[in-house]
Amino acid sequence: MMKNTVLAALAALALNNAAAKEREICVMQFNVWQEGTSVPGGFEAMADEIARQAPDIVTLSEVRNYHDTRFCDRIVEALAKRGLTYHSFYSTDTGLLSRTEITDSAVIFPYIDDHGTVHKLVTEIDGHRVAAYTAHLDYLDDTYYEVRGYDGNSWKEIDPITDHDELMRRNLLSQRDEAARLAAADIAREREAGSLIFLGGDLNEPSGLDWTEATASTADHRGVVIKWPTIEILHDAGLVDTYRAIYPDPVEYPGYTYPSSNEIIPVNRLSWAIKADERDRIDYVFYVPDPRLSLRSVDIVGPQRDIIRGERVATDWGKRDIIAPIDVWPSDHRAVVARFSLDK
Image 1 (cartoon, one colour):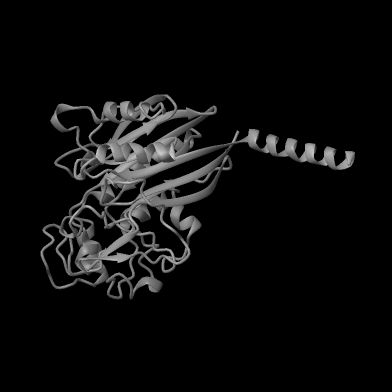
Image 2 (cartoon, helix red, strand yellow):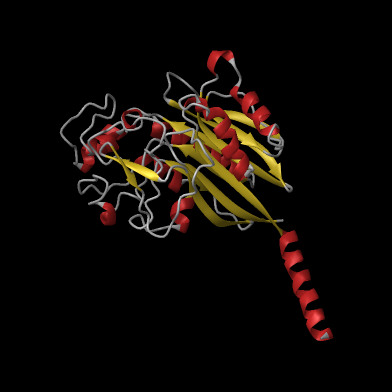
């Protein structure tokens, strides 16, 4: 009896020591669809969803500061009403929230004519310098739509383009690769500084990890196999795609984030290519691997149905469930939540 009691005490002590050595870091990417204004009750729903996950870092897309307001202040205040303290700073198009105090911030790719942005914050978590980036990249020259028979600027129907070299040429007319290169250069400096590094965003471009031989006959890829350049730039900079790190099979776990079937919004407001299967994974959380970090989980949060050719269709992602919204969903995208263990 005494031996069992001692063993139980030792086991409990070991668990407590292990817990003391680790701390979770959670990063959430959330396209909030024009600050939640596109959905009735969207702003409060957005705050509720952030509060439910309680992430350490939130990367936000489609921040507009409507009517000369400061979105950063409004969302921080809304979260404070839910019992959570966050810090932020003024930005346009993309936004960042941090549960720890922000010691520095920077514009990496500036907002000009709605062609996207990249912002950065620096904070400290349990004595570790952390650099977090938020990216919302150019929505024009969306060449992956052209594979599906829609112009990537006007979204009018065209003859599908499937030639690899032509797709690459047209895609590089966007400014997404330029933004990614600027982010990669700054990330290199943060790596030299020993920072833990995260990047979240709606990059408006799919990943080559999703456009493979295995997926060539899915989602109207029309046989195209391609390494889309923006994501490749980030991979080359040392960033790892958290979702594909845990779920490497793009057939069984496609992880589509857009377009999601927001149930209270008409389909024609959610789909840009109404006759196509336009589903893609364009929202990401990346990180730079570090001995201090262990990726534990990645979840997708949002509506339970996809939109395919103008129809709401039940999502079939094999064994991987999507976390359902609390109530109203504020976006036409799904959110991505990645959790890490940090060795103290």
